[in-house]
Length: 178
Image 1 (tube, rainbow, N blue to C red):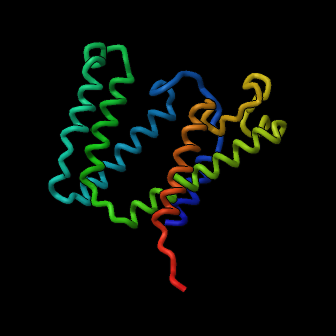
Image 2: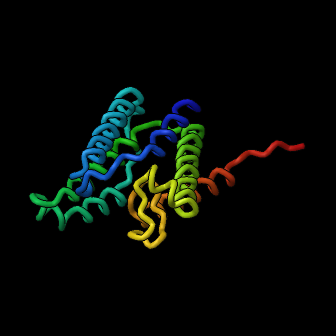
Image 3: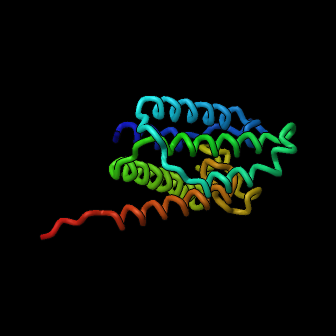
């Protein structure tokens, strides 16, 4: 598990130049979505716990959110991404997550956020080095770091998610009585 987490951290700190486009028009995003879907399908097939928990309110909310877009689905790839996310969520409900699995997932997100915080600090305080490593342009971004995401708001939301996972890890930590 530690080796997989270290490999994931190294892969997320590796910069891939922007090839233009957005959303599923980017080949890396589409490749990641396909890979994630295959992993979830294999895990759901191998560890099927029978009937998944029913959550009709969340399912109905997701379908209501999709309803206006389904009428315009032909030229809008965001509809298909939202539908895929809903199906991914339903597949994840079928997996048996133990507290150990949940803790490992929280730890993975926290460690990845710490890595991105390091990248952001490098871009903020060593822009000349970040320009060589990450094609970071200090003037174009008005000095705002963006990590590997190439958008300031994505870095901020990922760091907030990582901080939330860190707090959850602290809250669920079992302390030895001494």
